[in-house]
Length: 395
Image (cartoon, rainbow, N blue to C red; front, top):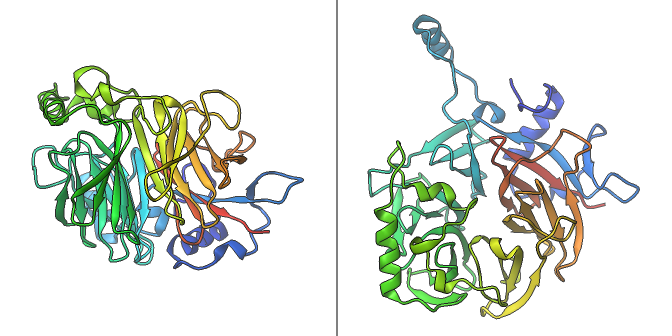
C-alpha cells in the first residue's frame, strides 16, 4: 500500500492514519502521540501540532485495485490508475458520516472519500451541463448531510444531498463569483464570499438575501453587466472561461468585477477569498488584496482586523483558507509563506507551522483549511496535490 508521495512506507503509521481518518468525532487531542512524530513547536515549548499524514488518492484510505482490473490492465496495456486522485485540491469538508469532500480545481470536480468503506467517488462537474457543477470551489455542510458548494462559473451556490446529487441552486442573479460558503445553522443563515462583488452576501436558509458585508455601491445593472461579460469571456480548450483560473491567484480587474465595491477601510474588501465561522458565531473573512483577515460578530458588526502585508510572522502576503478550532483559535493559510499561522481569539499570533526543518507536513500553495470537532486540521496542499492532516495536541 502506498501511503504518501513524501513519506516512506511505514505500516504502523499507515494504520494510525487510517484510524484517524475514519474515527468519529471523539476527543483525539488527549491521545499520546507516537515517539517518531513530527511536531510543532519543536521545543523547549510543549508540542501543539502533530503531523499525521496525507491524502492524495483513494489508495491512502486503504483502497486497492481489484484483481479483475489488474488482469484487464495487463491484457489491454492500460495504465493502472485509481479513480480518485487529487490534482489541485482547493477546499475540504468532513460530513456527519466522516466522509471527506474535497473540491479539486485541477479536475473541476468534487472527490468524496469514505475512510469507513475505504472507497471514493467522483462527484461530476461539467462546463456544458447547466444542471451540474462547473467550478466547485469553497464548500461546507449541515448536520443533515447536505453539502453547500460555491460554483464560481455558474454564479451560484449548489446544494447537494448526501449522495452528491444537486437538489437546490441559490444566488442566481445575485452572486457574481462565489468562492466560499459558511453555514450558521443556529442562527438560520449562511454566508457566501463573492470575490468579484468584493462582498460577503448573507442568505437565510430559504435562499433569500438578508444582508451584505462590504461596500455596496454598485446596483443591479452593474451586476447584470458583469455577469454578462464573464459569460461571454474567452474560453480555454476545455470550454471553461479563462477567468476561472484567476479566482484566487491573480485577481481580475476591469469590467468583470464590480470595482466600485472595492475598499480598504474597516469592513470593506478587495477580492475576499475564504470565510470561516467561529463557535461564538463570529465570521472571519480572508481579505486577500488588503493582506488581512477581518472579523465580524453575528450581527455583521466589524470587530477587528488581523495582520497586514509583510514577510514576518503575524503578517500576510497571500492569505487564503481559514478555520477556527474549538477554543476559538484562528488558523490561516498563506499561499506565499506555505504555512499556517495560528492566532488566539484576541488576534494575537500564537505560532506558525510547518517549518522548513523537516519534509514531513510541508505545504506548497496551501488553500482551504478545515478543522473538525475533534480539532483535526486538514489543509488543501494544492501544488502538491494532496490534503495534509495534522492533529492538535493538548498537553
